[in-house]
Length: 448
Image (cartoon, rainbow, N blue to C red):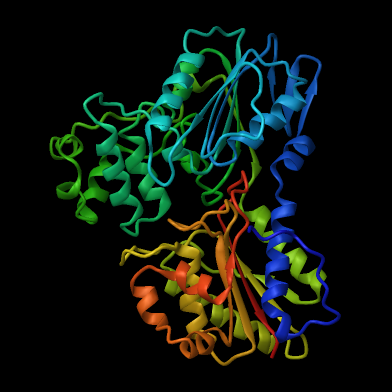
């Protein structure tokens, strides 16, 4: 059963309760970044305009709504409440059916981490919904992480769904940072890299997005269907060469790279974005700050790691641990906590189940073995890699417990099977789908 938030019943901070304390802090984070709460706090319908901070668009007639990504169901329902049901029509593409469907909305179940038929059907429906509009019309786009595969339509009609599956599999398992993966995705897609917004021009457009990418790269959220694209076809060719991908691509995609025949995406300054507005509802920074607050409330001296978060999982774990130990030296008389976010890279090296968060926790468990320390790493979307878990938690006794059962941590790591390692120990984090996605949260606790 998924983990449910419970009151923290600990009279004092102690290493014996360390894993439960870490889980509690993570659940506090998930409560703090609730999608409905954020939307109702930050959006306001006033007269004939929808306000989002300093951004507003006129609502002269009921708007059309397109929602895609892991938070699509929750975002669509919340917006519908805010608008008082005043919506012309909508399309929602999410990883699962909603609990309750809205009137005048069409729903599609897309695929993640790879596109499926629902991804293509939903994208076609969205393109139809926003085509042939006028400047008196308004479209509200609700965009969240995971949209890159949940919402897809190939630019070249010769590219099949099977080819898209293989293309995405090569990118996701190849250890590329998310921004590089999305550069490649954008240039094969009829909806990514700003092309969806071009279809909706000249209607007034508002994109409300929940970011699962670094804060300085908003056009990478879901591969930026509604935003101008700064990346180029030249970067695509360079990345394919750098990672030796071209020869591995399916034939129809390989030909586009070999002939350098990719089509360029619309760029900043394009007149067709003149009616487009953008507002970030939630980002990884919100989750990290919430973790810091929750850890401080629990009694830790907590700081946010200032290092690089988006790098190889072993490199990030080593750097986090060094910062944790430095933090402990600066505050020797208090339990300390360190928070980090982002998304580490973690190449798939075996046939097992797991993801970057559980692999991170398994590697970190080996580094803290025998110490009064705890590490938790989990995704805010509720799914880590190809496993049903959000992540995992470990402490200084995790490795000794595993060895007592005959487990070889190094073998599980090499087989990309961190999920079964932690499930056997009872240390997975299982929130179920969260209808949200603001990247990952990593928490380190030191009780020494």
